[in-house]
Amino acid sequence: MDKHLLISHLESSKRETSQGAEYWMARDLLPTLGYTRWENFANVIERARMACESAGVNPDDQFRETTKGITAGKGAEVQRTDVYLSRYACYLIAMNGDPAKPEVGYAQTYFAIQTRRQELRDQNPEQRRIELRQRVKEANRNLNSAAKDAGVQSYGLFHDAGYRGLYGIGLADIKSRKGIPAKEDLLDRAGRVELAANEFRITQAEEKLRRDRVEGEATAIETHRQVGQAVRSTIEKLGGTVPENLKPEPSIKQLTAKRRRRLAPDTAKQRALLPPPSVSRQCTDQEVE
Image (cartoon, rainbow, N blue to C red; front, side, top):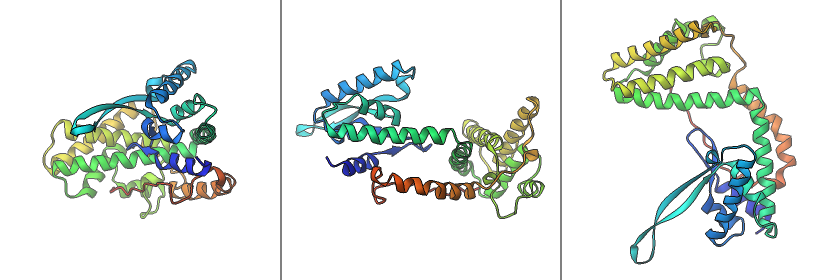
């Protein structure tokens, strides 16, 4: 298989969890890496698992076996084994594949580059903050769903109650205190500590709404306020800085745009190792806050 076509296949078969983590399915990789029989590819996966364990990494976190029902001859359903694979797992599979297969060599290069890029992102505080912001967005979507089930219609009041519990003041006053323009998103200006506090508030509020089967808008709003207040109390007991006293940081939207400009030259240099833009998949979500 041509190198560019193989890399396109690897990109197109890449999937994402709801948290944005990348993974691949072993059955999708099998033909891409030049294999035709599952039994042979399963042996490669097993060697990769052993290499993972030897490196001191828990293989169960990187390789997760599953079974799927498929329709066989005469309409009978049979169970077929497959494996969820992290990027690191795919890298180890490529490194333990048949070196005589050119597809394996191409995959080794692809996953080595992708793994290194992830390492660099993980070492970058800005990137960690961006990723945490994305987690908060996802958590807010889940909270909105729970609030809707509880009967909330005034989402502005509902979210303001959570802010009042955590910050001791409403959203407008928080922005004024921090010098954040009214039209800017508070959480886009929050640092990692402040984002983490809000993620805890949001996830715990969702959990409590669902666990307690809260019904009625007023009750849901008060529940959100109480959860925010409890998180604030925990911060105070630990001797931490309450969130309204944390300084705002540069806008995450601006950081994202800056990062794209910074990475553009590198992307051009690596163009031969990347798939055509039409193959790449991007997800954009807009939260309601």
